[in-house]
Amino acid sequence: MKFLKLYSLLFLLSSALAYTQVDTLYRAPNVYAKGKVSNSKILLKWSVDEPVLWKKSLQAGYKLQRTVVLRDGNPIMKDETVILDEKLLPLPLPEWEKLSEQDSTVLIVAQAIYGAEFQVERKDNSISSMMLLNDENNQRFAFALMASEQSYLATKAAGWGYEDETAKPNEKYVYTITYLGQTETPMSASVYIGLQDQNDNTPPLKPEAIFGNKTVMVIWDFESQQSLYSSYHLERSTDGKNFTRLNKVPIYSWESKSKIISYTDNLEQNGQQYYYRILGIDTFGEVSKPSEAISGQGMNFLEYSPQIIAKGAISDTDVNIEWNFPEEGEAKISGFNVLQGEKEEGQFQIVQENIIPSARKTLVKTVLKPSNYFKIQAVAKEGGSRESFPVLVQPVDSIPPVAPVELEGVIDSLGVVNLKWKQNAEIDLQGYKVFRSYDPNVEYSQVTRAVWLNNSYRDSINAKTLNKKVYYKVIAIDQRYNESEFSKYVEIKKVDIIPPSAPVIKDYVLEENKIKILFIQSSSDDVVSHKIYRRSEKETDWQVIKEIKDKKTTEFTDANLTAKIDYYYTIIAIDDAGNESDPAEPLIATPVMQIVRPGMKSFDYYVDRSNKK
Image (cartoon, rainbow, N blue to C red; front, side):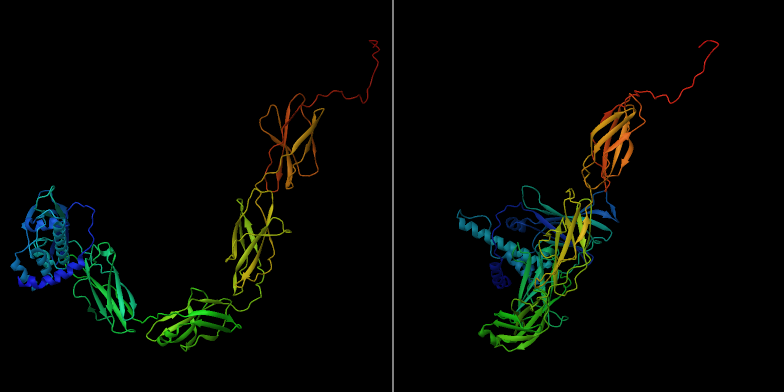
């Protein structure tokens, strides 16, 4: 046919672009199907995923049937299956030419199906013959599917799509598409859909754009919306309202593993604002709403950048800067600007501008802060600029900050110390250094490894050491590393969790119904009292019989005891934190009986004369 011969050139040229590396990973062939609701109709589309099977399907065809699953939201308990088409095949060739008047895309599918005769099976045993046949069939298969993605008219003409106009709004169906060719196992696909189903009308994601010299590359995400759109249209505008389509044919992702699509457009001029947006095309050939537009301007980027080679602060308001810039770049720039900022990566402001292109040094009049960063900017005549790397300039400063004040701190039982102090007011303050000691009269050790930026600090010490107190000092440091004097130290008393040492019962003296106990007090210096405990052999609980707070007392006499009964004694020391020592080694003693009866203080007598006594 004439129209096929005319279109064959386009097909061959497109085929050269479609060639990709062969995927050597084997996958079992299958049938895939998809459905969509459109204008009170259900649109169906399907295909096989293997070139050889695709070729055979052109002769074997597909069977399409529909089963009612729900009616008015209720499951259908009986089988209500109808065959919509016994055998769907491509239309005869003469009918394709009529369809091409409505949509020229059908010509690509017709060329793939009815072009010059081809066979997949080998006619000889040569490897080259097999490869040529396989490559030709792969290309026909790929371009047939590609074209059908853009034209639902071509899809239906090829026997790969169907419009169900008999579907009812109150019913939901399962459509089953069965491949009629011979395979080891039956091959089919199903689509569960009803007229009440909602389509996903999400527009494409906003593209990105990289502008250059009268050119722009528009880039957008293909992978994340691959289930919605198979190709795209790209449109451009100069006012953000009236857009013109740039592509004549839909834009695809040619590389199967690609996650993005890119399109390069040539601009009429630099400095003009251009707007770009994309429209998605789904597998049924329907076009989505446009994405959000991206805008920008083309510019002639400079090939050269200035480089600062010398700088210095002459005073608090004057800075001398020198730089290098290639002479061949002078014709492309309108001049230089000097930029100043407080941080290396912060915002910069122009402090001197319109320096002539031939200049290589300047004296900048500005207000200098403790730290200043400067850059030289070369301004291109056609728009855009190039900047040098920033350099640090600091005025002369030998005045240190004042010493921090109002230093205070607390400590918990785990040894975590929280310090805080009043923030210094110097504008060139860089931070602080924190120091620690266990003796206020010896050298302090720095505990911050670097300059500390906050006016609070958390330290951690060993809570089980014998040191009862810890001391801290802080110094302030400015941007020129001038250090202040030490702050006044803060004394922090540790939470005492260490019990005192145990006292020792060293001897005893037995007296009549008394026991004198001789002991050595605890050696810990924070002990505030000693408690003497006693129990008899007939008792199980210890009783406190005496609390001694005098640090010089070393003996105690327990009186009014009962003879021939064993008494047990121990002593416990208590420190000022309430910690108790281990009990002293117990003493067991028995008071002695009364040995000498009391002497007679007086006596009386009388004579019994009657009895002569």
